[in-house]
Length: 71
Image 1 (cartoon, rainbow, N blue to C red):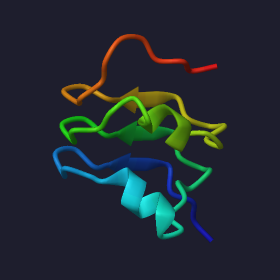
Image 2: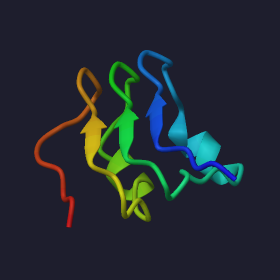
Image 3: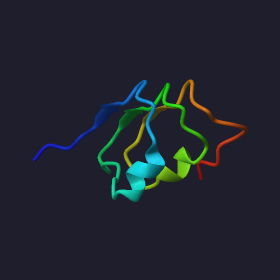
Image 4: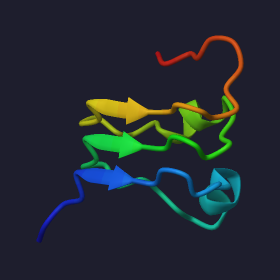
């Protein structure tokens, strides 16, 4: 079985709050994730917990404010 390592969701105007409440979970095998141009806010950080292999994350041109707690 193959694992998803790269995912490009550039410019999809995602509503991750709805996805997660419907049971969506990021594949833990993700290494590269592009979420740029999606109008996401600071809540995205908590949505990305459980991605131990993530090496590259693009959050450019979203609705992020201030600093992000990535600990």
